[in-house]
Length: 244
Length: 248
Picture 1 (tube, rainbow over the protein chains, first blue to last red):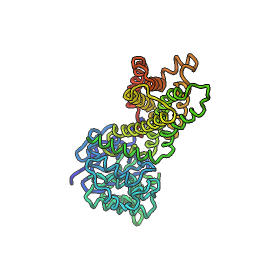
Picture 2: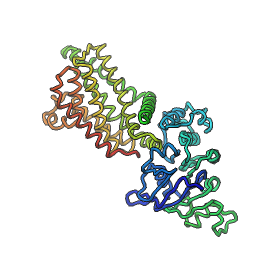
Picture 3: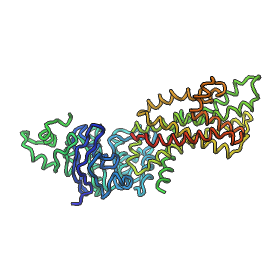
Picture 4: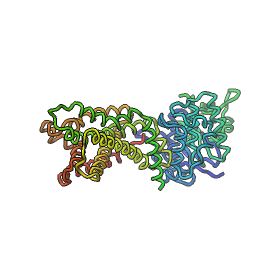
């Protein structure tokens, strides 16, 4: 399989704090790859280095043959990013936001079909502040897809959503994957990773502590519970609950 | 070409968002006109003739408009975008940083230009104001003063991490600057030590002198000091902003 993201010995420090402590992994073309770990594990820092938003302290990252530190603008034409923290002005309308971001790219997708595909066409003239949490996330996905990217990064896509909206988001991720795109999914919801991801990397305290398919990870532990989950795997590896 | 396209769309977006902010619209476009009307209304018969008063007041109100945008407008918008993470969202796009910051500058320039234009039209129409200098000279002075003040006060965005702090810093510095720079009170009426040692280090003082000179037709060789000072503040402000600007 062809790797589209190659991360080698990635380290990210903020002063004396080491958020990412030498992680390595590869993400293959057209897979859904999950980076899973508790809050503060270093997931977002790692992904922001991959997306070229932050510069690594050391190590190397290659995305679609490009170095994000040197070719960040070129890379952003090829990838789509939904940020955990990334909002819009309250008085910006949905269609305006999508048109603006479309016009920042060299080869954008048409906006109207994208609005329909994300199920927010009827909200196109609404202000951002009037949208529900789920609608804001749909718009964030639309913004990430506006350049028809090869790789899509979702950072905590379903945090703060109710169970129904969360499942709708999962369906959306599957649809995006079905279009042939590679998906990098960052989450602290084990169920989400188990349901969606082809492979999962567990990150804890800035280190990759396990990496495999959800099924293999579950099989790898000697659990006394009848139906072990990824949460049990994480607990057996790190001795920590995810909510810590 | 890509940067120009991005600059165009980001500027259009800024102007659309500004259009939806009635309070900002009032302060940018109508407040200087309201102050002019108020100043002329409280003029007593023993004061100078109204055209002389107007010709003195109009350039200072132009500077008041520019300084408001430089101290409140642009830093407030950047702080708000930073706090809501909109700047970070833009950073995930291929938008060049120069296009993002340029669009904020271009939209505030357009709004200030419109506000100043409105002020001039009202001053000429209602109070007989007359531009004694050349229009091109006034346009050049306006550009230099606007960009110099905008660059100087960009430092506010570097030292403030939230919209609230940005607003507080702007309020704390705005009124002292207006009093010490000749916008509210002519510099020559200030205590001698302030006029000599404090006012000259404030760029707004030089903006007032230059705009008054350009409006009243003062020979350019007598405006060398404010022109050189404003260029100096422009370069210094841009250098500080380049090294200290934060996206988050």
